[in-house]
Length: 284
Image (tube, rainbow, N blue to C red; front, side, top):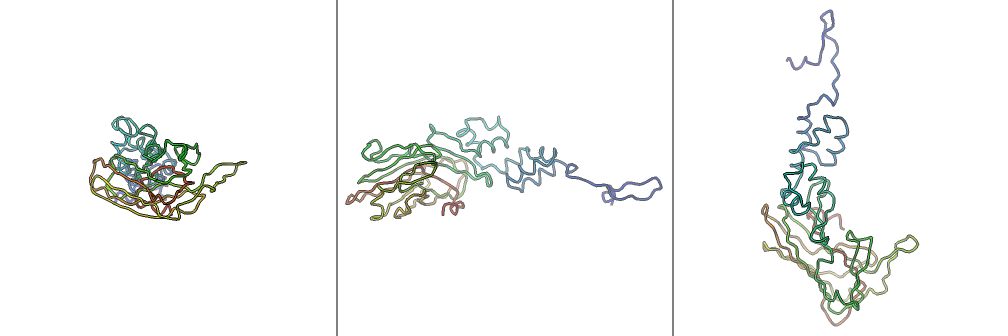
């Protein structure tokens, strides 16, 4: 009962006055932090602008630790090259939400800002590509359309094979692996994007075979013809599942078209992406 009358005051004649008005600044910071536990990071950041109490609550370590992936200590050490104990949880989240290069600048890792899920990309420069050092077949092209600012362009080849592997500690979950490819060579002329498809050939004769395998026994494969010249596409290789915490996993993957009855060419190879499988709809 007493709590119900705490917002009333008595006037001089002893009668009850109207309720006193409360505002958001009167809400205890600990209560705001508890509410933030149920919100997405972008929502927390927007509410932090309201007042001092919300701003203070938005910096609480226990709030941001609940948003970080279970392997955040590994990410801080390996990706940020910093001790997780020397950083606040909000700072770790903010730094990991920006793509971070590692492994000599050939890989990137980042957190999806809304969900806190880990994403990974691998440049073509970290892959084993048949004939990559022979200028008759491949060339390295500077490109603004790649997060690595460079792509590999295939003029023509008989035996097409690309192989890669990565060792990484993923949080438990299901992940999908994609190759980012484009038929045709794009450039800019007079400020406009144009794509030359004159050298595109051979991909409609036989499908490209994609494969992946993981150190915990998962295997997947798929086949498809490369299609739609002039635009970048994410070709789905397959999915894999991580069951255990704090356990590095080795993932091997490849794409090949090794039917030597015909040549194929006019292909741009950018990178490989590993995303949580729930993000697959973004690439359709």
